[in-house]
Length: 327
Image (cartoon, rainbow, N blue to C red; front, side, top):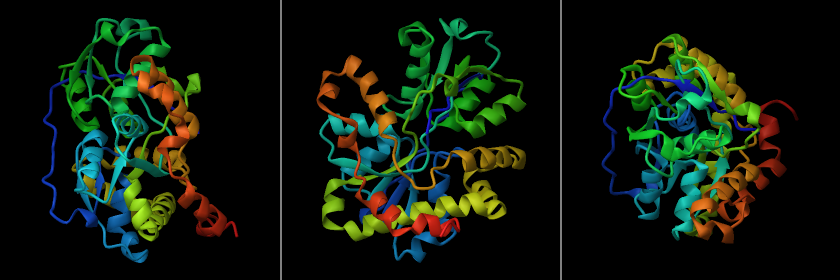
């Protein structure tokens, strides 16, 4: 799937990142990394709709702000699985982390901006950003490079997750930020507009995905397999049971208006990958950008960051086709 990125103008006040204390029994937890309208919705569905239990999994969800922190906790042994994005997985692997992407939910990301008239006008402006290694950080750098702006030519202010970045922009603390579809819709309702549509640049990007350690894959492949199948069924639930899905989104997004969730549901339904295959092209794109500043990246290929056996098995079984009534 091609990357879909927008640049929206958003104007800002800093918001605090929320972190959660990790429970002692790491094996039983899967981290979701954002409370935005699309980054972690499939994990919420898996828990609230009982799909974890349906597939025989004794897993609970925990919120950890940002894929970098989620992967750090995974590597430390505090978690069994974590949500993540491609750039964070690559950075962790380059640093020696023994992890792998086991399935993908979205291979698309969106960047947005508000009243700035052209991409060139972003030069010298302030941006609400996430910590290095996150999808928001990478997507912003990628978008700017595509329009000929050096990252050093903007004023980056680290704020945190998507809701905090949107607040930072709308409250006038910064000039623009990176957002996903739900925040894009919300921003447009506040008078903001798209500046850069990365979809038109045809840039593949690995966005939401699930990650675990290769040790977990070796020692408990059956559990990993069940997690992959659970994610696929949760995507099907989201796509086909709108009202129930929106109610779950309302619980986790804490006060986002129904009309915004409606728009996010429509966008997510189109972007969620039914067969949950990661995008190797998106990982290649990220790796190429990473190689510019990190020579270690030249020694790796996209296939080094994924474990496709479980999505391959799922495809051969016909499970996804059965979910959607295709066989």
